[in-house]
Length: 227
Length: 408
Image 1 (cartoon, helix red, strand yellow):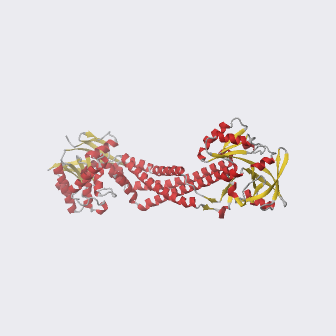
Image 2 (cartoon, rainbow over the protein chains, first blue to last red):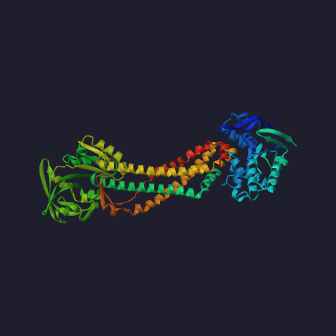
Image 3 (cartoon, rainbow over the protein chains, first blue to last red):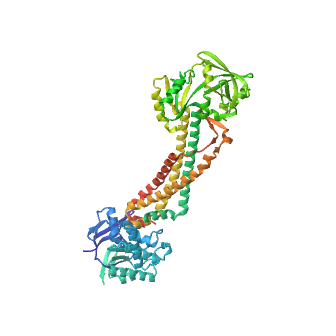
């Protein structure tokens, strides 16, 4: 069974008297364990597609299934639970809670799940060690570099052992060396832990690391290549 | 715990703003507590003075006296009525007789109208107020002694030991009696000191031709809070007498009305102040929420429910409320302490005393802790603080992840 199944997905945004057709009818299937890059120029619809797959936004038409469960028609609270339990997110701007330390940010998803304090601290420490941040667990985001913050974001995304991680331009704000390190990290997590990664990116390094590249243009899939 | 930590740190993000808001709550709360205790002190003093000089916790008067104020309406067989009252009420207290008389005092050098209170000297010394006003001379002993207000003594041009004649109307006839000035009374309120005089109940009865009549039989309880039960027992016990049995509130209606009016006005002012402070808190929360909209979007996207985010904002309100209201209560209580022990002297602005609701009030006021009311206002303040975070919390609960994350 596909982990993500997208059928005839459309998303229109009214803008004054005009309508922007961000997605014009996308079909996509992602299998478990894939390392997939959505490529395309700005405005091609990558982020919109990622938001719809993650249940952050509602499509104008079409359907998204996560592990066979349709996202349309379900209550916001159920959708929140689905995101909390099955999906991890990594954002371009890291988006950590600035008043929480690295380990507390990592614990957040587990807190939302109701995991006990001792267990979530233990798991968060292991996640931070897995992303190479041992010794920095108690630093605030402002005390970490951009690359380190993005590692914390990755640790937060995988702390709940999700089936799927959606990453929106995760390397866009990082220098070349840090970008490579982060791509290597996510690639390793994909291989070793079997976590499915879907990236929205126009970073060639991510494209090079991805095993499947989906090219988007004007809200449509232009090309779908598996290496 | 992490959620509480997060809420607390959120409050501390903009320390200056949170401190200013907290300071407003602390200051407002402290001022509320001080005002409550000052009002309570002033009312307690008024009630004590009113009861000690003009009434009791339970007051027995001739039927119709309270409504008409007619001094000819008396409690007949006052001694027997006093004994029945003492027997009927099971609570500890002192039963005493009083008469309030009008009339004319004449000395060798002049004459003046006077308001004469007749009291039982020994009992009144113990629980009454007149003894506290004794400024010069000695307390009443025999039926020929009279105490004069300092102003009245000046008008009559008499000194301690001087003689004067008191004349009053009894059953359409004039009665008079010779008195010797035993002491001078001073309340500090010129209007009272210019007309007041005190004699013994025994002397008043002599003036009434020996009849055992008094204007009032009053019971002053050891424990003030027992008055409702004592009143009911007194009413039952004296049901067959031609008397009216009143509570202290009914016997001192002007004072009771003044206290109610003043308390309500004070409460109105305090409520307005509370609302102003709450608006400041509301502004703080709204700004704080608007600034964090994008962050809430991230929390929503990683699986937080809108209700959980709203609860986080409410928790911030609860933490701010608990800390600021708690500190305000401590500061207020500490501020009250010196005013409760040493008093506040308003003599410079008000003179030594003034009359409110027919009762003399000293210009030196003492705060009295009123814990139930302070607790009620602290709870009210806490509720207002939390209430100020409700709308921002509701607003947050309506956010969608994408909209929130687009927010700059």
